[in-house]
Amino acid sequence: MLHPVASAPYFHVGGPEPTGPLYTHWLIDPAIAVLIMLMTAGYFAAIGPLNRRKPGSENRPVSNAQIRWFLAGQVLLLVSLGPPLDDWSYYFFSSAHMVQHLLLMFAVVPCWIKGTPPWLIQPLVRTKVGRVVFNILPKALPGFLLATMIIVLWHFPAFYNLTLQNQFIHALQHAFFILAGFLFFWPIMSTVPESPQLSPLMKCLYLFLQTLPSGAVGAFIVYAAPGLYPHYANATQRPFGLSVAEDQVLGGAIMWVGMNAVFLTMITVIFLKYAAEEEAKDRAAIKAGTLKQRIAPVKDPTGAHTG
Image 1 (spheres, rainbow, N blue to C red):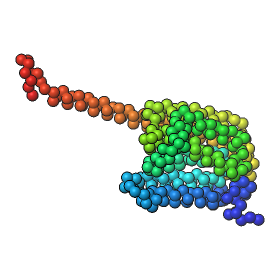
Image 2: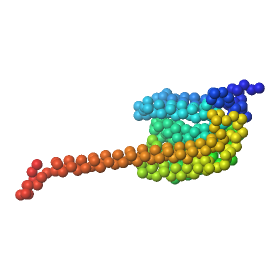
Image 3: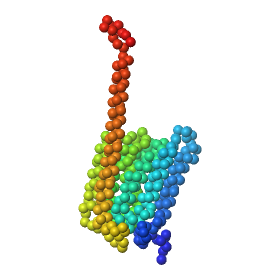
């Protein structure tokens, strides 16, 4: 009999269901652990010794805030792909799988973007391939369509169930969701002038359009007959008393209501910030106009200038 370390966490497929109070093995997939360590080491090497070896390193600063954002992304990646969430999402709950996907797209990716210094991205953006990756693909319409296709296709029962039967396909699915997160966020969070962000009002329209496919997919999952993803119906345990039908409705609601709540919150924040900036500009213009009137020379009735 294989030890749980050898059988369960490294390849979920075929491994025994976790037991215990929280239904988790509390062991991270070694491949995930190595990936996170290599990414973190590569980041610090790029902003540290590799940066200092090149001339002009003083023009390539890295702030503490950027480092904190990147490390937050790494922690969230660990939370997304580690226990207990990863065990729940594979063995028991489609709703946990949904949370896992949302964390990858809407938490990990933005942290990476905020945490990566622009000077580290700019050499890539200026290449032919980089122009496609950072300029052409993520722009509003292509980014919207590609991200939507990724989200919709991977939630079709045939593709979704395949990920739970094949570890490689499962990892590929997660990689595609990270790509979807990049395609979604880059047009509204770009940090380099070579690939400018959308205007504030276009960001609001872009985010509103994103509510349509997420709402459609979420509603489809909520109203589908129980057992849409039969893998979870085969579980021998129902942790926390959550039935297959309840779990499916919860998963669909997380996508339908949860994602749209995020989109609408972002729209509100962006629009209020835009409105405040426009109001500040108007006030400054009025103040400047008043000041000009005050210091403008006053004409004497006889035609002579005074003041």
